[in-house]
Length: 237
Image (cartoon, rainbow, N blue to C red):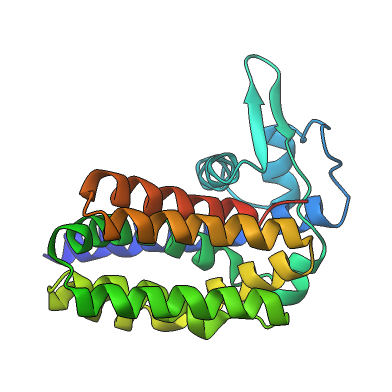
């Protein structure tokens, strides 16, 4: 048992360290030290610069690839794919970004399943509550408000429509992380163009329509796409 705990502790420590490396490399990209379309230093060079082992560095690089910030070219190394907007570090200081991104990943799975069940089980009362939150989001776009509360109400209403308390309680336990992520993405969207805000809202509308039409497969797909897009929008330039 003690060996198992020690192993788990070591894995957890490595993951935490790779999060730090992930954010340090990300900050260098945002600050322009590593330019868009430029090649990153080799793993050996980065390991020396950041004073970490290559396995830890590879975990960090893998996450940056998942977030489409860098890409690998066969036999050539890793290249910067995009430079996130500098405002990202204003709204989400280094130290929080890795957790936000992993929260988005978790939400993709959980809320995709919730949307599918909501489409199967929703009542007229549930649907009215989801639609009310959708209208509140429309209002926030028109008035220039941030709309985090309405965004949260929309997703919470879908969880309630599953008629399964575990979806509701799981979201409640994650609420701080969820709202932090929503605050970040909506702040970044608001600092961009109106078209971007409308694009986000169209994703909400498609989720609502699939639940209204009682199409579980489409509801799941639309929700998964929406949260994946939200995760990637954090790193739009």
